[in-house]
Image (cartoon, rainbow, N blue to C red):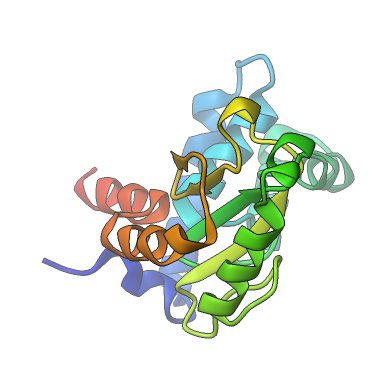
Length: 184
């Protein structure tokens, strides 16, 4: 069995770029009639590839008949979209008011210490990306940390090592998408 993340570790070949463009066109076609189709298309592309490349944005623009400026505007308006490759594991720490007063800043500092990066950065091995967000919508349970889509509540700095260890063992959304794509 091949490792689905291998495709993320090297520059894609011409054939891979063609396949990617074909996959992106299929995604556009699937959501063409959806209300808010552009958001759904960008969301599915990001889920599959881990970020929105310039090539992907251009393909979506042409296929949907929207200007690249409009597509770029949507991609940069929503915080969940990324124009830069992220690590295999995305760690989001809430710094909203409720989380902040419960010690979220100390949690962020511990993630920084353990990963050796600042918020907005990716580890050199492309394993983790650390980000801070203004609210994750679970204020009563703060501080909240989301890793690979899984919420951890009432997080303290002493739990950071365990959260990172668990994240390393979980498949990421990108890995899941690539594994599913290899079977379709």
